[in-house]
Length: 401
Ligand SMILES: C[S@@+](CC[C@H](N)C(=O)[O-])C[C@H]1O[C@@H](n2cnc3c(N)ncnc32)[C@H](O)[C@@H]1O
Image: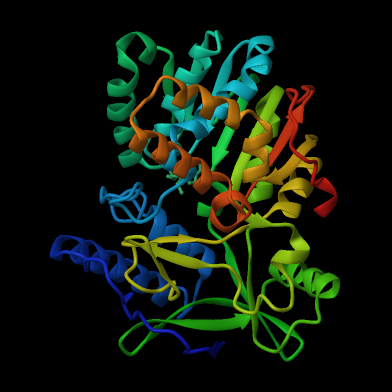
């Protein structure tokens, strides 16, 4: 094992409030648990396990510890948090498919519940009566927040159609599956390319906290990284990147249940050639704390979101292996503009005469669609089984994968 010793648990710096004592106590309890795991692993914890723990360790991980995450007062803002027009556009675009397919939606990782609320109301406005909206959320805390938010937003009558699942349903489903910014929250393995070898980068124990540590990569990680380097390298010495082994099994599990329907995935990411380009020397892994980017992934375990971009070529490959069709791939901006956002915007400003409100809506559309905002960084992929896409006028970017 080689100590890379290039990181510490230095907290993020910059504006924004420091964590309060209660949050720091949570973080230090999680740190102790992780240190114990490092010790029992002989001084090495694979990064994917570290990421799983800091995000999902029961009661302590970032997504389950009860601290505020999403929205302007949280750590990051997602597309459904930017504007209700996001969910409304999805609803309007998918309405014809849902009408045909028995009107059922399964959403993964519903965050605050905003997307669910906007989609349910959007479908109602489009005249589609939804039979069931099911949410599979791994965080018990977020699940509770979703229940409270949706009860308030939708009212009791609509709420009877919303259900929460602990795991994928056993029975085959005919549904539209939604996963916005879920894949980026799935753990990644880190690797480093050095001396013509692939090193697995994990977490070790330093004198004053956690440090990065490297060991020779296990076979699956070694094979994946060598294939990427052969196709998109040569990489410079010390090149660091990520590999997400969980996406294939996730797609496989969903595909196994999906008898007929579509899977819509939205996330930040790239086609593989751009993900593993030689110039991306430090990979894509980052943390978010109170809207600030934090470059040290080992800082404040459990208090900041850790996320890495999605390799969309990998998603397409995993989908094909699982027997799904890859039906569409486009930037979020061009997808939304082609799927009906402009008409919904016109409709929402039509009855308004407060210029401030109109400006706000226009600003939300810019944020969702402009290339310098979320328009290009975020990508959309639609997979399907035995189901055609609804008509749309966004470009087909599948050749980029
Ligand atoms: C970055 S948040 C996105 C929330 C929401 N979709 C949005 O766009 O605002 C990630 C969400 O995915 C959930 N999550 C992560 N892995 C998951 C999995 N394997 N199955 C279901 N939910 C998951 C998290 O608990 C969280 O709710």
